[in-house]
Structures are given as structure tokens and as C-alpha cells.
Image (tube, rainbow, N blue to C red):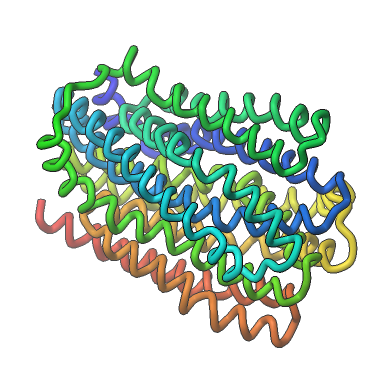
Length: 442
């Protein structure tokens, strides 16, 4: 059976294949998001570029909620598959998708209502605040569609269907790539056009997140209000802490955005460009967290804790190799990238800093991703929550504030990275302790 092969195969190969295939999809959507930023920067209006930067912090917050839900659904489905209980996997898939869609609608509605206050807290003012608010009011209602696509892709990865999961975001990216230049440049709709293209992409992702599950991976089962209510508890045992864990990152990013905002729109624009480059350059690391979870979940379901530990170390090795290679590439391309985005002054300085030694520090963020995915699937999700919130509060605010006093806007990013080093090492130590404890009980 497909799931047996997945459990018994070479672990480093599984980590690599699942991460690479997932990263192709992620990179596709992030590259088009980057191209979106290029189109906006070509308008040579720092206000619009800064608005995209502010909006990115809020969209990251909304998307993190969906990612947290997908972690819980994926873990439950993967455990059922590892135990070779396919009817249970089908039931958990259906309940997980329905609950995720409903909860995402409620969450997005709350965010939409609070948008004026959120934009103000981020530090946006004047026309920049107006453009940011308008863009977010158009985009946020489409977030539940993105959540359905994310959860559907996570279910496919739990089944070992890496290529099908990849195609969810690949097709979403293709739709966005086709619509972006039409609406932003040809129709001259600027941020409104970017929002319209985003809606088209989200619709495509939702459809492709559901279709393969329905037609290929066993389909869905009937659900009732009672069954959905009963499914809430096991889902939120994992997804509750996972959501809190995921929300820590955008909250920390929002605080950093507020600090950078004090140095002007050019600084925010530079941070926004670096923020778009990060997921493109390190898509494999973002994908690694989603890939490791199902592998650990299946091996846990099969009672193979030795392979859980091996997966953990193989993921760290993979992370180190990817970060080293991509950091070198960014360094070599820093000048062409600055020209591409018409980056000058402070904007260019921040971009050069990111493409220099600072990108190497993302390795420690990768350690946190791996440790969190491990803990989420071994029943220690709350530990992931504490680590992530610690990293994005105690590991961000004092260091970023200190860096700002010494080096200005660049110092904010330097300080933020230094805090990541400390918490990355702490996350690995705590994850290994969870593995040892879980091994002792099996």
C-alpha cells in the first residue's frame, strides 16, 4: 500500500522529496507574489510599495490561522493512515475541512472588522494607511478560500501525495501570474488589481485542494453537527496550540514593522522587499515544516520512534544545506535584485543587508520550524507555542530595539535575527527532550 511504502522508505529521501515538491508549490506562489511587488515597485510610488509591506504583515497573520488548522488536520489524518485505518482518515479529512472553512470565515470576519485599528497599530499614516486599508478590505474576505486550499494540500501530504499537494499552489500561482499584469498594469488598477488577482488565485487553490481528495484519495464522508462538535476537541488539541504558535510569527513581524515604520516609508519598502524575497529564497525551509509533520505522524502511528528521531536530524541537515546554498545565491544577486526593484537609499541598504550575512541566520528559524513540527506531532504542541511566542517577543523586541538604537532600521533586522539564534538552539534542545520522553512510553 502507498502508506506502507511511505513509512518504510529512506527517511532523508522522504524529507527531501516531500520538502522539494511542497516547496515547488510554495515557491510558485511566492515568486508570483514577488513579481506582484515588482509590478508595484515599477509604479515608482513608495507609498504603494510601503502599503504592500504593511498589508503583508496582516495577511501573514490571517494566513497563519489557516496554517495552524492545517497542522492539526494533517497530523490527525497522518496518524490514521499510519495505523492503516483509512475510513478514520477519510472521516478526519472531511471534518477537518468543514471545521477549517467555518472557523476561517469567523476569524477573517473579526480581522476585517478590526482592520482600521490594525493598520493604525502598524504605524501606517496618511495616504499609506488609506491604500493599505483599501487593499486589505478587498483581500481579507478571500482568506477562507486560501485556508481550504492549504488544509486540502496538507491532507494530500498526509497521504504521501506530494505531487498533488504541490499542484494546489502551482495552479494558484499560475492563475495569479496571468491575472496580476492584466489587472495591475494593463487595467491600471494598482492595488485594487492586485487584490482582484489574489481572489482568482484563492478560488483556484480551494478547488484544487478539494478535487483530488474527492476523486482520488478516498473522498469524503457525511458529517453532522454532532460529529463536527465531537471532532473539535481532538482537532484543537493539536490545532489550538499550533494556531497560537503560527500567530506568534506575524505578531512579531507586526512589531518589527512598527519599529521600522519610525524610520520612514523607504525603510518599510526595503523591509517589504526583503519580506517577499525570504519565502522565495527559503521556500524549501517553509515547506520542510509541513513535510516533516506527516512523516513523523506516520512513523509515530507505526510505533517507530527510532525513525522519528532520524527524521528530525535529517531535516536539520537538509535545512543547513538549503540555507547555505540560497544565502550564497542571494549574495551574488544582491545588485541585480536592487536594480529590479528600483531600490535606492535606505531601501537598497536594507536589501543588501538581507542578501548578505543576515540571510544565513534563517537557519535558526528553520530549527524552530522543525522542532515545532516534531512537537506538534508528538503531543507537545503547547511547547511549540511557548517557543514561538518566546522567539517573537523576548527573542525579538529587546534585540530589535537595541539594534535600532545602534544601527537604525538595519539594526532592527539584525537584532531580530540575533534573537532567532538563541531560540533556535533552545527549540532543538526541547524537541529532543520530547522525543526521548515519547520513546520511553512506547
